[in-house]
Image 1 (tube, helix red, strand yellow):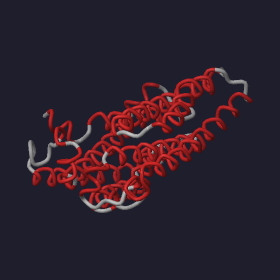
Image 2 (cartoon, helix red, strand yellow):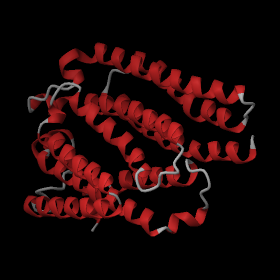
Image 3 (cartoon, rainbow, N blue to C red):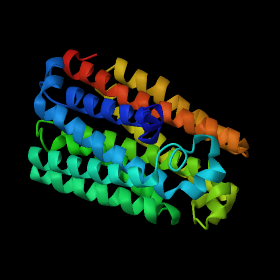
Image 4 (cartoon, one colour):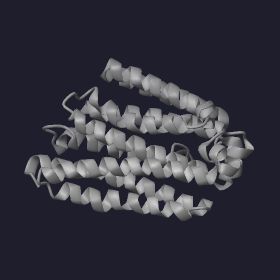
Length: 290
């Protein structure tokens, strides 16, 4: 069971589910805590869980040769779980996830089917191509928020788009950082990732530009709330999201080892979670004006 949980990246799945719960509770006009028990929402979470888990399975299935070099200590497929079983479970999980999504809303079913296909194509070819793999993963992170809109149309769309944009940009940054971590194995298997094609110095410049864009997005939102005389929400964004991103931007200058980029990757993951938590503070401002 432990190896299966590692295979489906249960920690990442929990973050995805936590994000959707925050969207459902805090980006709706009249949501209450009890709404989490809505059977439609539970099915939506289950559908997301199945398709995301299926994506992680096929990713590890296609990454066996690369992981032998990059992460031999974390290898699961072929070592603890049979590749045939992984492929079978991938198909079953995707099929069930798409059927559940279609039951909730036919548009959601189409999105789920497209997501399952995109994860499959990513694992087989997209992730080996320059920028395409990074953009696909970042897009899917944003999409995991947007799908909540279709069964529940009372989502505040403008804020959903802001958080989806934040998820896309931070996901894009983290994927490029992870490519730097995995350069050795990727290069040995002919991958054309950003650090392999452009080199470490230019990759850091690209990262700096994307981080700078994200910082500007945060500053814009903070200024809007300060203008509205809000206190808690912009203060939280500034302390727990903006400042860590500025520190990451500064840290890039001297980042030149895999160990440093591993730390940056973890920091970005924390920033993504803290950014998600800020949805609750935005809800506080809407309801209490502080």
